[in-house]
Length: 126
Image 1 (cartoon, helix red, strand yellow):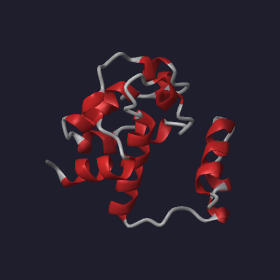
Image 2: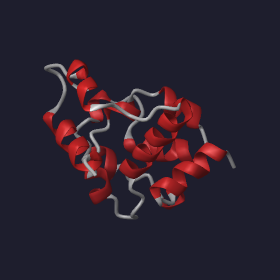
Image 3: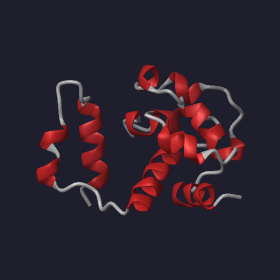
């Protein structure tokens, strides 16, 4: 088993093998149309340990962390938590510490969803 795959599972606290591929997570995702790897597919990539493809995916950064997929999953797989864990693994690999408050305004544009900003604020304010 790949180290990255195990780390994603450990950080997320999720067992991707419980996924039954019903697609409810992807159906409830507000970023579905912008993702190249949909939430239910993301779970499969973790199951198959294809972490390299996930780290190259734009879906990793298109996820709003709204956790609508977490709420809709009938098996408790929580794809959003897997996506978040994959982000953390990638950031740690790159040796990044995250952004400072002064760096954020330069990254924003008219296309940035307000939901993304609020979700990130709630998540990272601690």
